[in-house]
Image (tube, rainbow, N blue to C red; front, side, top):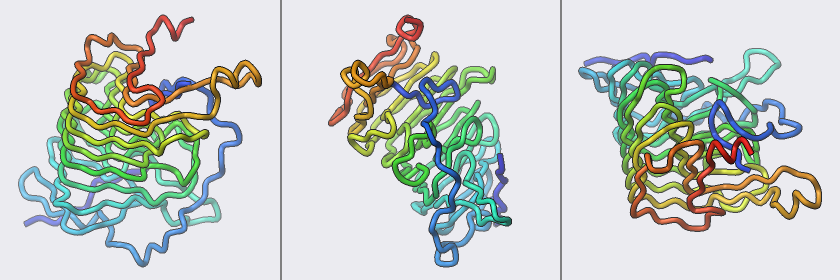
Length: 299
């Protein structure tokens, strides 16, 4: 996966959003195309837009990036109310290349992200594994994600590929238990999941607004997901507009399609008692809270 440490100026059915995703890949996955963006009209590159003082890297301007911005170990990325826009790389040969992986990623075992807007302006692609599209990714890292806005983390329109998570924290590869505070964030127009916590993580998701795109037939979105043993808290959030219309149980009986559903809060293969839930507001979700257990997975 292509990524970089930013150059700094000093004074630097259920379709489940995870690497173990349940459900088939969409048929006829679209070819890579480049977003119709005139890069000359956009902001300066993010690689030259940070000022570092101590362990805080502060974004000085709205900027664009076509590779992952890696947060150095132990650093805080302070967006200072500016916007990072992810775009597809300009191709260097006739084969288009999509943006790969996360827009912003913790580069070590600890990081913080605060007060930044992250957006996508991407063409159509379909990536898997480490190349899956994410807005903010903590993989084997602890820390906080607060006061951010993450929008349009998706591959074009009507894309059914199992990627496009606005905020994701995970520890699935033996890195040990990680702790994440995800507070006062706004996420919307994501492709797959708004806020995702998977595997050996303890995540606190509070006071955030998570809005899907409403009834759609091409992907089963989920607002917030805790999966594969994740634990923590989901409190004081507004979660709305996650609804899959592609194949109902009635459709399955008639056509043989595989029925999937969307949820505002998805608890996937976990003990639900390990996720505290209170004062959440749910609107226009196919299921507000949905528990999928190992027993149901094996049945």
